[in-house]
Amino acid sequence: MRYIIRDYCKKYPNDQGDQNINEEDVARPTNHKWVKDRLEAEEKRKTVVGFPTYGTCSICWNSGPAYKKCIKCGVVEYQVVNFRDYILDSQKIAELLGNNHEVAKANRLQHWLHTETMNYRDDLFTLMLEVKHKHIKDEQERKRTIMREYRDFTTFYNEIGMPSYV
Ligand SMILES: [Zn+2]
Image (cartoon, rainbow, N blue to C red; front, side):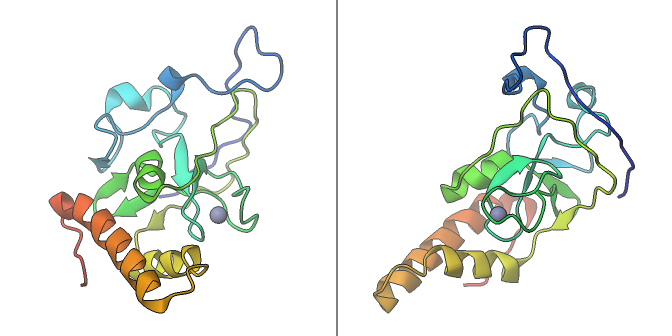
């Protein structure tokens, strides 16, 4: 999926310059978990392209405004995550992982010249968990922590067919 969007900006009348986007303006799957194919019509109206407001950083898996550079890593942009035919809710992903979520600003101009999506990949996910928990010195404890987080996460998505390779 590819779209070209320029100068998309949501302005609020009383914005002092750095106002967070209102919760009701956030487009996300209505069940806050996933949605098949595209956002529902109701949610679609909130965006220019029918894409969710938030995406996920493929390195640290924090969530933030889609197609804005991750503030933590500074390398890649938050991207909308697909798993098979589903769009996964990026806020939920961050919540499941206890990760940070960067709230979108209402007045921020977004130049969405390219809007690629990111496919869920087991190897990327596992790599992120290894980096996230590398501060745990005890190897057994580190492995247990990674395994538990891996299992909890993939189990949450079992319903839409995500396998757990352990
Ligand atoms: Zn990141």
